[in-house]
Image (cartoon, rainbow, N blue to C red; front, side, top):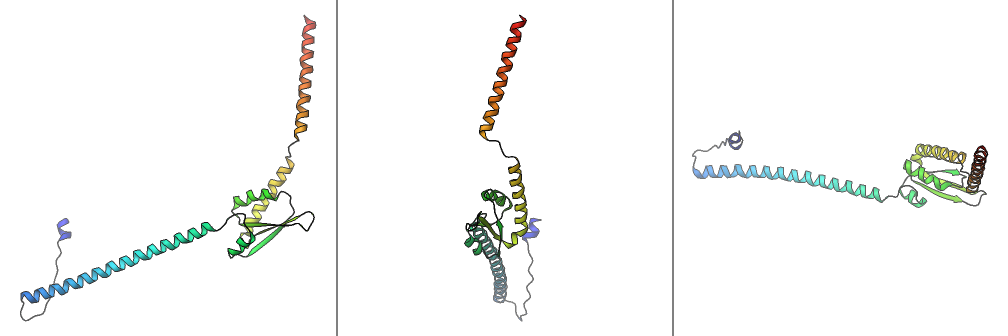
Length: 187
């Protein structure tokens, strides 16, 4: 099989009145020049394709690098505007707005908080990209659910816990004393 691949037959047709070594040599040289030009063209096409792919990969890497530079999550309003997206806002009157950050990061929302302290109680404006409206509503639903659960499960104060433990200890002491008295009387 190797010999078949290596051996090539070339058919060369030359019209001449007298075949001499010079004519054969000239025709072979012309044929080989044509073959080398074709090979050079193929190589040039392959190199152009390679460089095109390399340039495309370079552009793609640059796009990814630029995306990595973009801020994500909580950011300033200027940074949101610089991303070229249309902004939408929602008003919130909540004192514990910082806990919203955790939920927003979970949903991958780019947003900005602005506090309007002219109103009592202070009003918070949450600016976000208008394309994130559906994601934002889901995040707010989860945030509202988390806030409601936390308010229902308020932990008792430390003083109340301490008072309860003291009462338990006092009851336990009384039980121990009565048991000792009862045992002492039986003997």
